[in-house]
Amino acid sequence: MKRLSLAFVALTLLPGMVSAAPDLHDAAKDACKCLKEPYDQVKRAIESTNKAKTSGDMMKAINASNRCLEALVERYPEIDRSDELKDKVMDLMEELCPNPESVTEINP
Image (cartoon, rainbow, N blue to C red; front, side):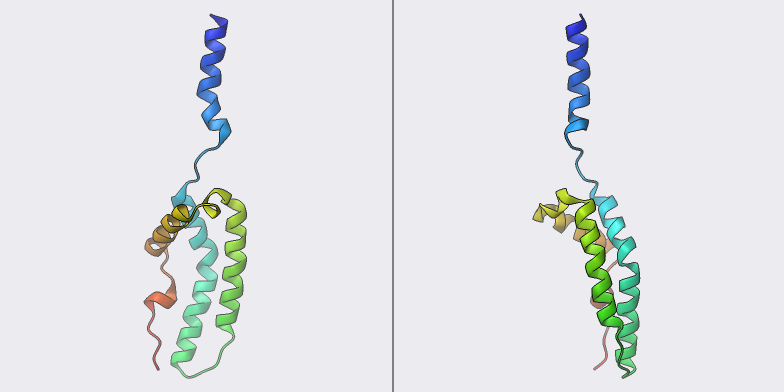
């Protein structure tokens, strides 16, 4: 009887201990959260471009985005190793926080 109970406990706990699948929605929300400031900088840069002003906002946004994404790679290594999961997170991000470059028109 003790063997059966230990086996049952081991089998029920083992899947959780091995590795839980990454939560793609949480990853997308985390990405949106850390990209909020860079996206705001992109919006300001686009507005400045539309007003014929020069601005360093775009470079600041690119640098901040790179730092954000590097941190996400460390937090979600399972997603970083899978192109399929990356695509799913990107799709979720487009719903939650679309890239301002893709939704804002730049006037020539």
